[in-house]
Length: 434
Image (tube, rainbow, N blue to C red):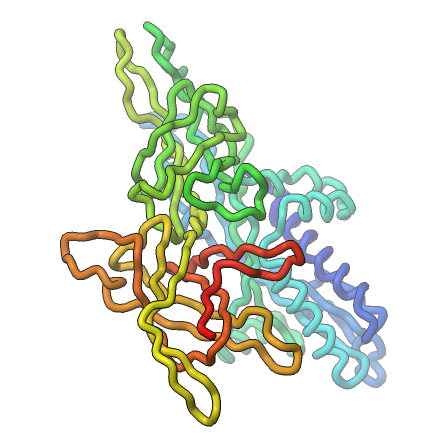
């Protein structure tokens, strides 16, 4: 958790983001970035009321964060003694206001600023540490902002004209081009001492949990950029993952084999997904880690702490075969219609959203590549109401210009993989509709 310096630290990090962006642009130079109340941002030349080229960042409101508001409560026992330090969860609301010496300067400055905050919609931990290392006062670097469990997110806010008018009237300042942003969530924790009960002693071989596991990433063991397919070995990355006994669930189901002791560390679990023959479906899946604890003698395993659910994309693998192809022509162009029989691993559920995408293979350079999309039939062609999934989907297509096409299947927004040839050009899977 962060400490009381966190609010100032957030302002300093955002100021650094804006300064770096405005220093790199070459349209309006120089532009100063300030953190003043709007009524103290005065014209550079009172005689002709000319503004400086300036961007001002102003924290105009702080509100409680609803999602974290009651976390770790109650924090005191019946005698009023402190049991914990629950976090103070805050949303910070900022005005980003542009001032310009010449026509359009304010708009240009604000344009660069809004783009910078759009690109920095999540303040990374490394970005926070780097910005605070150079911040003034230097004590802001001790805020622990980069170490809080929630990442800092920057999102635009929309204020209606009445709200804008009231705010600027209260600040007794002349309105200038302004964008409003919400920064959340900032978690501030007290450092006061509190009384904590002793943990249960391990008796008769019982295990004691050290705290809830936290998953921060799920990726293929071969690299974060590599696709996750059925049978892929995963690295589950996070904190406090290790336990004497644990199990991994995907979409609530437990698949064998579970991780062995050698596969488990405090910051990483090595886990292999089931192969295509399992009940796991392609699409966006969710993984969680459950710690187990022995509470009796002889030991009996009971459920303990459970991690957060972490989503990952399980990509399908397909093979396509054209069937019942009908040849026709229109305006001298050869057309094809028929069905594409798609064999897919893992299976497709009857209620999943399935689209087949065709992209022209190796098109000529003198025209855009042709592309088509076709939706799967109702229930993905599963006629039996008792059948939950299928490994074969027949998708009708029509009015496709004759040629060779790369084939992808998009299941609930997750695309099947394309395989490149040696030159790097995508080559498989493809169908020949020549």
